[in-house]
Length: 467
Image (cartoon, rainbow, N blue to C red; front, side, top):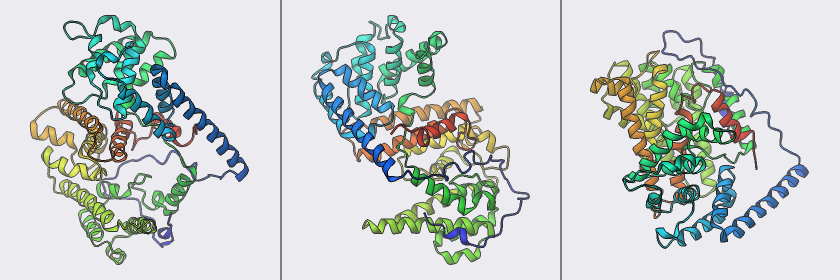
C-alpha cells in the first residue's frame, strides 16, 4: 500500500473550535493488526499440508454422503456455519444440485420439520427456487402451523431460519416466522445448554442476516493497518473517526460550507495541483484519496484493465452526495423523505450495489445513529425527515422503515434465485453488504461505537481463525 502522503509536511490540525464535532472513541485495536510476524517457511509449509489434508477429507465426505440426504444436508450446514465453505464451493453446489434434481414433486420431500426446513434453507441459499408449499403438511385445516410443533425446539429453530429466505407473496413463510419467533422467545429462558444459546443467538441474528466467518489474510490486513497509521489521520485529523471513512467526517463533522465547496471542486477536478487551494487539514485526505486510486489504477493496468474513469466517477458521485447533505445542514433545509433517500443511498457508500442493499444500509444506520448525530449540528436523518413531512412520531418512523427493510430483504432473496440476471458472485456482494449493515446496526451503531459484540465479530474474522 502506498505511503506517499505520510511524507507530506502537514501541520497537525488544531483543536476544533465552533465546529459540529462528534466525540468519537479511539481505535480499540491499537497496533494489534500491525504487529504481524510472518511464519517461517517450514512452519507455514506444515500448516498448509495439514489444511490440504483436511480439505481432502471434507471433500470426500461431501461426495460419500450423497446417498443419505439428511446426513449430507447436516454436513453442508456444519461446513457453512464454520465459515469454511469457500474451500468447497464446487462440491457443495454439485451436492445441492443433486438433491434439488431428485425432487420431482412435493411428495418427494419427506422427513421431520427440522430436516425439511434445513433442506429448504440450504437450497434457497444456493439459489434454487424450491416451493414453500413443502411446509403445508405442518399446518392444520385453517392453514396455521400445528401447535404440536412447539415442543420440537430443534424443528422450530430450523423453520425460523428457513422463513428468512422468503420472497414476496409467500404467506406461509410469513406465518412461519411469526409463529416460530413468538414461541422461541417464550421458551428460550427455560431451555438448557446449548439449545438456549443457539435459540438466543438465532433470535438476535438469523443465519440469513449474519456474515460468514471470513477467510482472513493477516499479511494484507497488517499492511493495510500499517498504511493507515502512517497516514496519521488519527492525530492529524482529530475530529474524524479512526476508521477508513475520513471523507464522510470532513463533510458532516468538521468542514464549513466554504471549505467543503473547495474540497468538492478539487474532487471534481481530480488533479494533485488542486491541493494548493485547500485548507491544511484537507490536503492530507485529498492526496491520500488520489494516491489510493492511482495505486488501484496501476494494479488494474497490470491485469490489462483500466478502471480509472469508472472509479473516479463513482467517488465524485459520492462526494456530491456528501456536499448536498452538508448544504442542507448549513441552509437549515429539511428535505422530504423522498429527496433525502435519493441522496442518502449514495452517501452511504453503497452506490455500486443494488438499491435494496443501499436501502437496508441507510435506514438501519439512521435508525441507530440519528439520536447521537442530532446531539450536535448535523443534517437531518431519515427519521427527522419522515417526522417533519408526515407529522408522525419517532416510533411510527421506525415501524415504517423496518417494514421497508423487511421488503428489501425479500427483494434480495428473490434476486438470488436462479436463473439470475447477473452472476451470483455479484449478488453475493449485495447480500453480504446487506448482512454487514445488519451486523453493524441491528442493536446499536456498532460502527461508530464499537462494543463487545462488534469486537468479538471482528476477532472471529481475523484473530480466532479456523483455517
